Structure formats: C-alpha cells, structure tokens
Amino acid sequence: MPDVDRERAWLLTVDGAPQSYVDLDEPAHLEFEYVRRLGHVLDTVAEPGRPLDVLHLGGGALTLPRYLAATRPGSRQHVVEFDRGLLELVAEHLPLPADADVSLHAADARAWLEAAPDDSADVLVADVFGGSRVPAHLTSVAYAQEAARVLRPGGVYLANLADAAPFAFLRSQIATLGTRFEELALIAEPGVLRGRRFGNAVVAAARQPLDVAALSRATAADAFPARVEHGAALRDFARGARPVRDEDAVPSPEPPAGAFGIG
Image (tube, rainbow, N blue to C red; front, side, top):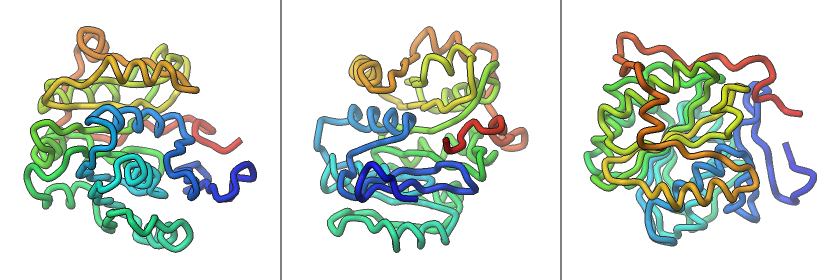
C-alpha cells in the first residue's frame, strides 16, 4: 500500500496486519516504533559507519537491511525468509539499492541458522512471526545456543518479541537467552512495561557489555520514547522464569484483536 504522505514509501501488510514500512528514497527512515528501537541498537553496536556482517531471520520488506546499507555502507547481509512468495514480491516491487550487499534466502530460520558457520556474524536480528506469533522452535535454549555459535565473540543478538502482562513469554525468553549471553537489555514503550497493553519488546543479548548509556539516550530522545531495562532491574523482571527447552516450547501469545491492525 502506498503512503500518501511520502512519494515512494510503502506499507507491506500480511493478512491485514502491518508488517513493514519502506521509503525507497530515504532508506534510513524507520517508521514503526519497534523497528526504530532495533535501529538504535544497530547504531550503538559499533562505531558509526563501520560495516557489519549481519544475519536477519525474517525478511518482510527488508527495512533493516536497507537501513544498514545506508548507514553502514559495505555491510554484508543475509536475509532468511520462509515465505518465498513474499521475497519475490518485495524484490519485484521494492527493489534493493544496486550497491547493497544483501543475499536473500527462502528457508526456515532455524534450519538455516543451524547450517551457518561459526563466528560468522556481528549481529543477528530475529524478527520472525508465523502469522502474528513467534514460532515455538525459535524460542528455546537450543535455538539460543545456535545463535550464540554463529555470532562472533563481540556480536549482538536482537529479537523483536510481543507480549502483555504478566509477561510469561517475554520473561521466559530473557531466561532462555541468559543461558548463553551474559549481557541483556530489554527495550519497550513504558505503557507496555507497566502492563497497560499488548505490544512489542526488543531484547538485545551479548557476551560483552552493551552500550546501555548510549542506547538509553537514543531511545529516550526518540519521537516514540522507550525505556531500557538491564542489570538488576531486568533480573528482577525475569525472576522465577525458566529457560525453554525444545520439548516445552510454545509460540508467543496470540495478540488481542486489533493490536496490530491498520487504523
């Protein structure tokens, strides 16, 4: 769907829910709140402009690959998207810039991750939804172990998740990622964290300290301010949650009607 306010901007919907937003003339423009938060983390994982090797699980309209190609020229990126038809639609109607080094793969995210080389990515971005839910096989300790294996020692794992109070799913994911990554941060809109509504939450995980101060400044100054939880506050938030085993894994909760609708 075209955006009437921006000449070459497009909204991609899947089953009636907004999935991605792209401005072909301004690839560094990030419209969705949760994507802006992912962008803030990507801005802080290395010095400005430094190229990165990035693996994206979940493709959509390739918003973040375009963003990184614009803000970190020379980055090498792989995008894994299960829906081959979606990849073909986006490639035809919303083509990537000619100088973007982005390889597209139609495959299951976990299967592709399990076959990926050790220490091959600086950043892994997981934004995978089967319908409106994160698939169960991307929520377990075994999956987190594969993500940690593929990331370099200084690498960062990023996930877009969705939940509501009492946050059973989100807390379990923090516990699960904590089995493989020493450093964790949770970024979300304050109303979501207070349990007022269902919404997106971005989790960042690493084996070396994250630049929480820079991330907090960026998210607080955003047009859609967010809060960064880390350290003792995040441990308290996840207290009592257990890491997820493959045999116990379930998808993320079903959003309430209209949670991610248009209009």
